[in-house]
Image 1: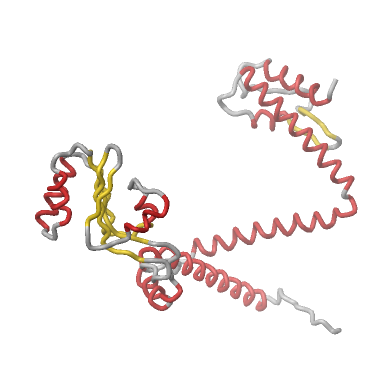
Image 2 (image 1 turned 180 degrees about the vertical axis):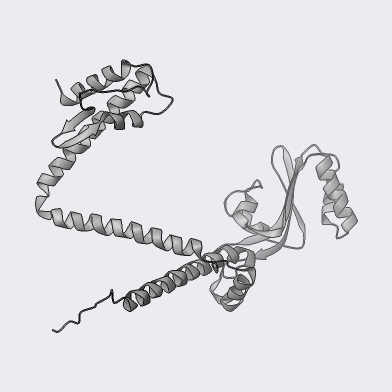
Length: 289
């Protein structure tokens, strides 16, 4: 019988012999579920691996799978140790380097988390934007504007168009009231820059036709089978134009945060070096070649 199947049967039998996963499960006198060479899988580990809500057959199946995977992994590890015996030192070195990297990253994170001067202010972000404004160029078209969609059967479409086109604040309020009262789809992006592609996604346009809509100063209209669309573009920024501050702000915050993080870590490194030198813990030997 396959060794994995033997282990699985024993594990299942032991688990099915109790009513819940918290009961003691032992396959041998010393509580070992499986062995591969000198490696031991404790039954307590198998028990802990079974989810709390698994019982009966589900619990047994999960434990069986866990034991099977453990045995397979240990056999591979043993084969790898034998096959790569000559490069064992290199593997140990890589493992040690990885361990040290994890420790250093954790330490550096603690430096940054405990720093009292790690806050990036709005003033610093604005100053960086002004000082490096030439670096912030758009790679896509942005627009500000609004779109209203309403049923093709709406009888006051001409009046709605006139209200939307009017410079009067009172008529603009009437326009908003009509849209709200009739539950028209109104997308108002006049206060924030949006990708032109996202703006177009609200309209029944395909292909290159959308580029013809990049016009300011007038209300345009489109229609599909069931609806009429009025759209107004109030502002346009094209590729190569300066990126607006609200778009650049999150980028700048990441830049400043990384710079501050590096400065905090560098400062702590210098403190460590200075303290070690005072204790005479550092000795760098000169190359005499």
